[in-house]
Length: 171
Image (cartoon, rainbow, N blue to C red; front, side, top):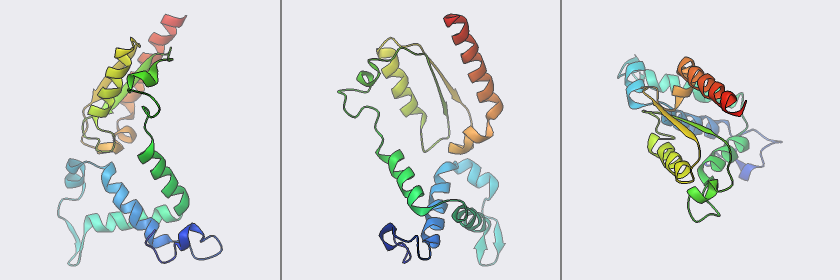
């Protein structure tokens, strides 16, 4: 929104706020990776004497993102994620599940900063407090929030097993 081309979100007949969107994506991208994965992938390696490898990578990701995404869309999707509160309108998180009759599989990743495991455990405790059938698995990963994109085989097996047991119970 600090981009001079932002125009209060009314930029469609003008130049889009590409610089601001690229910077927003660069900042956001950092939260998707863990400290360990950032160090492993980039360390303190330099691209040249004036730029670290991580800077080049983040600039590339930001520029690439601008070609695929609209700034207003990005803003409202991130705001929706930030403002969403499952317990809103209820006295407790558990109360939000008062009408639920389904089974749950909650998967978290040890290095996810965006959705840390303690938040998943809060959901699991709330579900169990309502006597809901919930399975929980925390996968060890050094990939941060991006782990869900990297540990696909592990997740596939967890989901496959969960769905198979659900089918047996319902069948």
